[in-house]
Figure 1 (cartoon, one colour):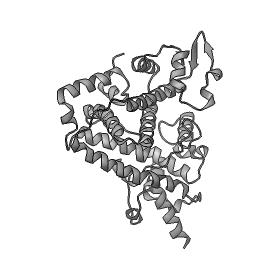
Figure 2: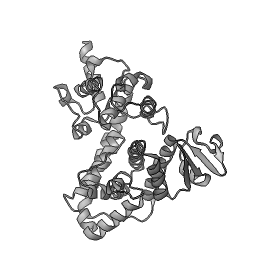
Figure 3: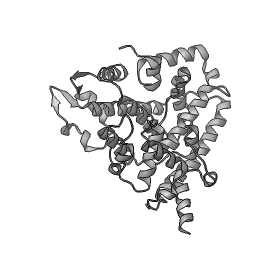
Figure 4: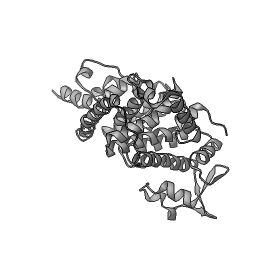
Length: 339
């Protein structure tokens, strides 16, 4: 299968992505790529911030060269920051983006991505994938869930049988592991002095933001009162009820907000049911994933107001200007309504 430049932007683990990065680095030079005002540098920082605030990165399709280069530059910045927690957050966010895209690919492309990107020994029989057991063990080693233990899988002549969904999940996990391995390599390209200021500012934002995000989770009362919802959430609920095909970030925001205030994944199915591409099994899987019931067991929270503005999902009212997160808005509005 011949991959496109868009494929290289979506799946940085394939060989084409590495080839494009190499060619662009040779043509532009690291000094140009990391120069003040560089679109690549700007996008790399944005990519890290998406991971911090949204726990999932996006794909910038307006300039695919910028997008493809931004991934290795983001890893370079992360190595310079020496923040292990942030590195894992970034790797998880990249994994989540890749997984969501893999779910929409056809069988042949999934097979091609696995072979090209990870050199796996795999084959497909109808809608079932088979991966050689040693490749499976290497890719699944960091998955804690007992569901992925080799003893719990069906083994056929040295090959592990996987459903399409599990095969996609395994590939996304392998990508996450590759990011962590690259970032842990001892050789570090020294970032130019002019970039050190950006790294320092990014570090400050990380230190200031991550604790606040954690606090906002524990501060939720669990009371469900739509009258206290921020306007952005009310608009998303209206759009969903009208059957509008919401983009991923909108769906992620709506799901994580409602789950954060006490809704169970099963209770949210009817909200997404009117969307044109609704699939009950897939939707429930995504909802359970963001709820922390499956996968990495990480419970995701809604993006910050700043991130929602970036994705044109912000619909501010007077109270919005006094808060930085939808959950903080919800708590403040609840207190106002109780007076």
